[in-house]
Structures are given as C-alpha cells and as structure tokens.
Image (cartoon, rainbow, N blue to C red; front, side):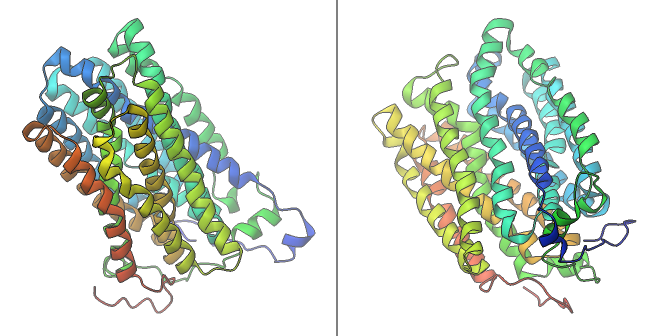
Length: 440
C-alpha cells in the first residue's frame, strides 16, 4: 500500500503472528465506519420519511420530488468519482473528515429552505459530502483487512446503512410531530460532532497506529505488499475488472436508491400508512437487510476460509443474493401489508448481501493504491443508474400510478449484474505485473 508522500509500509516478520496474540483494533475501525454509515443514512433518508408531509405543505408532484432526488444523485455521482481518486492521494483519514463535514452542513441546510429549488440546493451539498463515505470506507477496509476478511468487514460497516434506515422512521416522526419538520434536520446533525472527533483521534493507517501490535499488523499485511508499480488512470479504466465493478454497481445501486427514497411512499399509497405508522414496517424491512449485509459478507468469507477460491466463493454468494431479490416483482400485488414487508425485506437483504461481496471486488483484484479510484468509478456508475431510476419511478407513478413495473426492473437487476460481472471477470483473478491492461 502506497500513498502520495507516505513512507513504505513496514512488514513485521511472520513469526509475530505466532509469538503474540493477534489484536482486534481493526474491528474498532469497522465500528467507526459502521456508526458513520448510520449517520449517513439518517441524513439521506430523512426526506423520504418526510415526503408526505413536505408534499402536502409545498404541493409537490411526484416528478418534482423525483427532481429533488435526481439532483442529489447527480451531485453524488460526480463527487463520488472525485472522492474516489482523492482517497488514493490523501488517504481515508483526511478524506472521511472532509466528506463527513460537508454532508453535515448540507443536512443542516434543509432546515432553512423552502420549495423545490431550496431543497435541491441542500440536497446537492448533501450529495457532495455523502459521496465520500463509501470510497473512504472501502479504502479503510482495504488498508486494515486481509482479503479473507474484507467481505465480512464490508458487510459489517455497510450494515450501518440499514441501522440508519431503521432509526430514521422511528426518530424523524417523533421529532417532526413534536417540534416540526425543520427541527428534524437540526437535532439529527448534533451526534455527528462526536463521531468526527473520534475519527480524528483514533484513525490512522495500521502501520502508523499506536493501537496496533506487531501481530495484528502482520496479520493485516499477510497478503503481502502491493506491487511497486502504480496503475495509471488509463490502465485502470482499460481493465475489464474495472468495468465489471462499474457495471455491477450501475445495475444494482438504482434498486437500493429506490428502496431508500420510495418505500415510505409505496407503503403510504398501497397500504395507507402515514408518518405515525411507517415505523414498524420499515424497521422490519431494514432489520432483514441488516441480516443480509452481515450474512452475505460472512458467507463468502467463511467459504474462503474453508479453502474455496475467491471466484467461486464470491459468485456463489452473489447468485444466492440475486435469487433472493427476484420475488420483489410481486410486492405491489401482496394483499396484506406484512406479506409485502416480508418480500421487500428479503429483497433489501439480498441487495445488501450482494453489495457486501461486490464492494470487495476492487480490493480483491486491484492494488490498494488503485482501490479508491475504482470505487469512485463504480459509485459514479451506480449513481447514474440511480438517477435514471428516479426519473423512471417518477414517470411511472405519474403516468401509470403503479409500482409493479418499477419492482419488475428491480427483480431482474441482480441476475443481470452477476452475468455481466462473470462475463467481464470470469477468473476473478488479481491484477499482476506488468499490469499491461488489454482493451475492453
């Protein structure tokens, strides 16, 4: 692992692994990333829970709401690409500090605006900051974990997204009904200050951290050092593996955006839920997605620890996850609320399990010095897909008035993503010197 201006990483002798108990500070890093994702998704999803309230107050059409989401995603996509490259230069520590600070300001701005234009501006600032969370998180996991633990680490920190999605429908209505919707954005921004202080104090690269012993450092670096030669932007963009990751994100990310921003609306339109009754169904859905996030990361990691190769372990897990999402095609036809909740919960669990393994691809196949750039490209691609999904959802709801065609697209996305990933990276093999990339 090499960063601009960084010293070469010192690799402790292998004997350290046996002469000293391997420490566990890397899991403290995952805990920090987990908490950050909780805040990230509370800030991101608040507008979805408040949608019926804001729509009533400001008279928004479905297309107007879709425009607010669209411009958030546009800012998110462009900034994701920038943050991805920046993480490879400035590292996860400084990068996450900057991202968290920007999105916190954007979140607070919501309390001061009114109308579509004001919300678009606030969402753009939020999108710029939030785009740095995954590049920084995945960069940190690549720095702190050997390959055999990365999918599990990704699944654990990504589970924070689901906790955030669980907390939001419980906390937001309580604040909004008591103090008004503007106070929601103010009160939910306050705990982030504590996290930012903890990140600044605790996070360093493992070879620079005073909390890491020799045995844990040796374990973290047990995959060996990265090649001395760095991949250029041209080499990265010409690799099939890059496009496998970007295409996978393009196909599956829109479905997660759909769940985040439209599920409260679906439950309202289909089953008559409101701000007071969103909570329990959404909590169940995102608890299931949390189980999927951890379970999907655990399964492929467990298979690899038992000697199954990364190609088979990752893709077998991806197949199971993709099959779990397919019943969502019938969610809009469920006659009973809790049947729909079960179908949607299974789908969100499948998505998060799929994501935990897809997110491991850049660190599995690329040198650590290129991980941020690849993650940024994938995030850009996925968010462009999310923008298209927002426009499609708004159009279908205004014209057709049904979620069925939207859920059918969601049901097919994961099998399509797995097929594309397999075609572009059939061997799932790490890039090796001389790093002469064939054209795609």
